[in-house]
Every structure is written in C-alpha cells, then in structure tokens.
Length: 249
Image 1 (cartoon, rainbow, N blue to C red):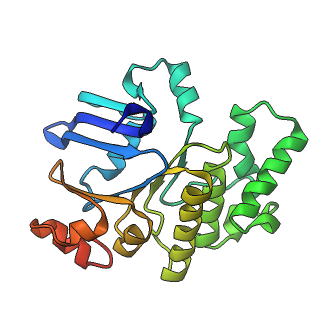
Image 2: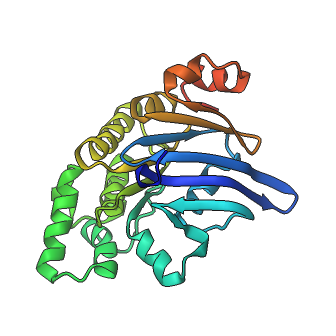
Image 3: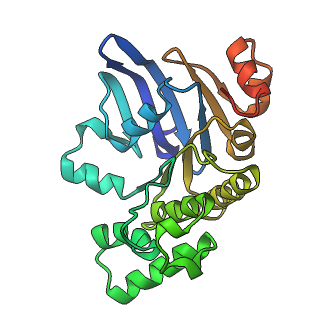
C-alpha cells in the first residue's frame, strides 16, 4: 500500500511483559478512510495494539507508523500534536463524572484548540447533535444510560475532528439495539467524514457491519486478515470459531 494511502502501519511489532510475548512480530496496514476490526480472545493484545497506536506503549522491537510518522521516535510535543489527529472511544466511555456532559465534550477542545468561548459552545452543541444528545448537555454522566454515555464518549472522541478514531469494544455492556445504533454512528463517520476506524471488538455481528477488513489476533500473531466473507472460509479452526459466533469469545 502506498504510504500516502496508509493511516496506520505496524512493522514487525513485538511487545513482551516479563516472560509473556503479547505481540510477536505483528505487521498490518490500515487504509485511510477504512474500518479495520481487530478480533481476538481476552488478553490476546488487542487493547495493547491500540495503546501502541496512540503512543501509550512502545514496541520492544519493530515500528508503529501513524500517518507516516514513527510514533516511538516523536518528541513529547510532536506526539501530543499527533494525538490531536486521533480520537479514542473507551470501552466504558470514561467520562468525567464530576462535570456535565457538555463540559466532557468541551474538555479536549479547551485543551487543544484556541477557540473563543462561544465557538467552543457551538462545537459542543454540534458534536452532541451528531450523536442525538443535543438536549443533554447540562446533565451529569450519572443521569445517563449506558448507551447515552457511549454516545457522549463518541462526541468527545470526535470533538477535534480527528482523522483516525480508535474504538475499544463499542458494544460492551449494551443491548443489541443500542449496540446497532452505535455501529450506525461509527459507520456514518466513515462514510460522511472519511474517518479511519480501528475497532477492537468481540461482537462478530458488529464487526461484519462495520469492518472493511477483519483481523484475528491469536497467540501473539495475526492468524487471519481480510473481509468477513474471506475469514468465513478460513482453514484455521480459531478463525472459523470466531466467525460462527455471536460474541467471538
């Protein structure tokens, strides 16, 4: 894939924790504007992969490139600048419980964008409107359902209009209808804004809906990668097991 078309590239990335090798020479590329779903059992390194992309972890060997930049080689200032081009939707939304919904969405804007108070307010309203929560700005997170909290988390993740959105288990703790609504919002970001989606999920129906490409992480290696239809016919028993399941282990 030409470098200019590549949003994220892993080049033989290895990561160990003590005697445990979590990632063992993992390589893959994510095309700009596509949705890449990373599947695997709990503890196989999916969240570790996201942390390498955002620069919270460094590989023991190999390289992680985001929009052509070697994440590990960046200065603190340059890494901070790169992170403004990436949003992160956490598994539990990770909202600040002591401030309102509107202030949660405003937090990254106030921290990274030099905007007038009125412009910040307009941006917050816009982002909440995009997730259908424009009337909830004054509420506290504790007043919201799980699905609404996830929507607020998405609005905050997109507050700076990042080109890449990292999503950790978007369906976790949600009923199937609400999970489908979150999937729809993510799909709209890709189709309407060209946002690159990198999604860790156990939810195979969600991965089928969202993913242009699916990859299965097992034993430190990517054992399969491709569109859902291709993985369904894989010779690997673990891959077939995932694709037949509703939850993916």
